[in-house]
Every structure is written in structure tokens, then in C-alpha cells.
Amino acid sequence: MTVTKIPAKKPITYKGFKILEEQDKHSDGTVFNVYTKDEWSYGKGFCSVEWEAGNLQEAKDFIDSY
Image (cartoon, rainbow, N blue to C red; front, side, top):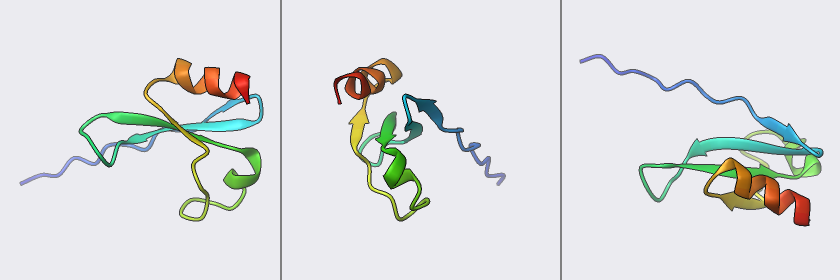
């Protein structure tokens, strides 16, 4: 049996925030996690998500209203 690993997505920078598309832990879909610049600097596994969005536009709208 061959296991295909899905490549990690690169974060998108928008107005100083980082948006990372990740596997949703609660469903089979994806979620767009928004991180502040300060949180992102802590590194993977140590930073907290500021907002979870269902799509990229929702993530950008959240940042615009921040």
C-alpha cells in the first residue's frame, strides 16, 4: 500500500497577517487559519489561531475588520 502525503500549503501574507490553508480537524474539508504577525513568530505548534475561516475571502474580510 502506498501512502501519498499531501504537500503543505505555503502561508499567504495579507496586511501583515498569515493565512494558512490546513486540514480541518472536525471534517474532511479545509480551513483557512488566520494568525497575527506576533503569534506567527512563535513558530508552528506554539502559535494560536486568531480566526478560522471557511474560505480565503472570509479570512481576508476578517483581517479587514480587525
